[in-house]
Length: 217
Image (cartoon, rainbow, N blue to C red; front, side, top):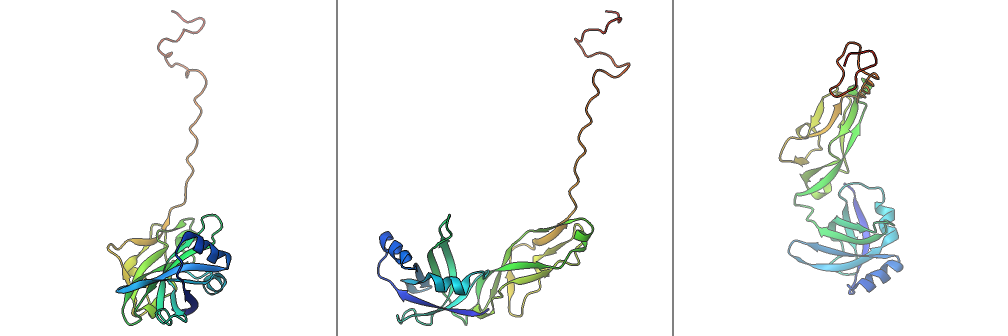
């Protein structure tokens, strides 16, 4: 995985009004933290963040550049990104410090490639997971895991244990669940036949029904 450099600055204000002022100035508040270290409040340029990270998937590894010694050249993962529910404006970002020499767990998206034989036969490809959790060194985190579905027939599936992962990367899971399958085509049920008006010839009239003209009472 490529390590992306991001310029950050420490900040002292933590009140809501201060954060709003930062956003008006084109900056985004955030926090940097990790095991055994105090949390540092920081901010960064929203445009730089967007230009470098827009469109990227999964866990992203960053190197922070800062005049503050406690932040400069620290390596971190994006732990949480908060956005405005309507405008998608960046509101706050959590950076989690990592040791590049120690394995960690991270979420990695799945990319399904190829056209399944079952789809050619009329079935429907159904993805059951969008991502998986892997364990590896931070710099070995793959951007995505490619899953070739070409050989799947209807009712076939690819399970966690069958995924092809890069060297040094291990999938973490408790049960060997399927990640993708091909299901049979949907068959529309024929509408129920409309019951013929009146009773069938020779059938007894419904209980309580009046007899037809000419019939004995």
